Image (spheres, rainbow, N blue to C red):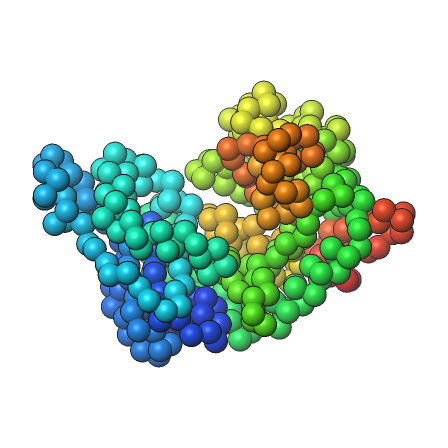
Length: 397
């Protein structure tokens, strides 16, 4: 298949999932990499989706660097920064990104930071509007040269990346049935009043963890006005933030993962006692040191996520970006608990802090996959009833 056709097919999936039958007059597309020919494809697609206007914010590092190296005056900067009219009507935000690009050296360079600051400055009213659109944001991984270089070692293999990502991500029409099932399962989990979760796999995982009375199960998509709203697309996880002081037992990785957005951990066995990692054996000394020395709050769990092993994303062992890798199987995250999963008011959290309510705090959140086709997940309710949630990698709920 022609590469431009593949790109259009994939971007059509993203738009279809993001809009999901709702009318938006303006779509703001933000990318952490240069969109180049993708802008032309998206402009074509806007007529198909009856979008009046598309606003683009992407980052072309070479162009930005060459401009800011000249020490431009304020007038020159003002002329350089694109400016957009204030949109009217219904607005949607789509963020196209991936870990490799977002955390690459050029995204964190002084030139890029200056450009982003100036872009926000000269489009402040636009970003004031965007900051209010909490339920109107969709985040999707999108192939680009930096990602291809990270995954395959060469930017020249970008076409291979487009093909594998497009082939493994289903159209929204195929996803909607499973999305409804996810929403129903999430609702059931929240009704269960779960006290404990226990995980087993044939790799050696034997791990239990408690939930807080205030822990909330969340999934994306969420129900919004009778329609599924995609915050992350695609997403096949139902997740919560547990009691970070309660984890006991052993977890054995089932898939390699990217730690701190660049270091790949191929294998690891973690042992927990009272929520804290007490033993870590992996193929990466850096990872071992981080968790053993209790650095950055990455020695306690901030998230537990349930994903069926039949996830459409399972067909690749490693995508090299968190948003896809975490949706291949059950996983947990070391580090920060997820705000949406903490059922405590902001006032109470501010007064006593998340740790008082047994939620973990950290500047980092690192997802680690341990599920496979053997995983069993059993829940125990506050009424001490045992409920089988997942068996042999598949939902029983």
